[in-house]
Image 1 (cartoon, rainbow over the protein chains, first blue to last red):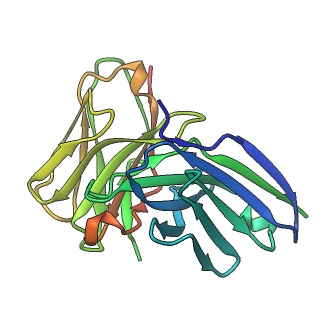
Image 2: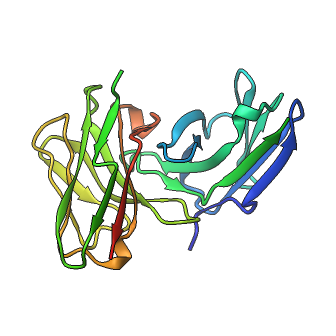
Image 3: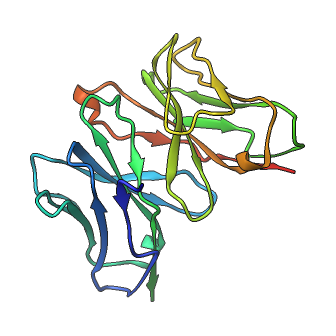
Length: 113
Length: 115
């Protein structure tokens, strides 16, 4: 049973517009959420994270929003660039679990020039 | 800046063979992890280690073994390879942090095919 769900396998966005990637989770014990970006033939690269005590975290063009009551988080990329084209994974962990991450299946973002 | 280094990058095995996937990190991280990623799926945790001499099972440990004799190295051993172990294997590490809230850093993976 999936504890972290990314229900959109793919997303296509025009360059300069906003990309919104969504993630839902079922385990209310999750307290740390991360987004990773992955290019083909490379390992995942950490992008941004958020603790459950916050509802928003920003880093440049990337913002993550957390809605604990809905068990939902989203990653906003503004403005989107062609170099952002990659697979984005949402991941979560429980405090005290040694940082073990539960991953979603990923969303493939394509940013078209 | 080497970070997490995995070798080999690619390997083809025959059913029943064994091999060791190597992982080394130069960031002095205590925590290390092995994941596998099947096509169209997210990463799943195989084994992890919180420091030299200490390892524990993750979500999908069957058919694998690990050891951690040094802080730097965390090899993953496949005994009696089976087609179901065809996957991409990622090693990761992270520094110690309160409750585990530190991002993991990943290697570039080992693509393993078992025929």
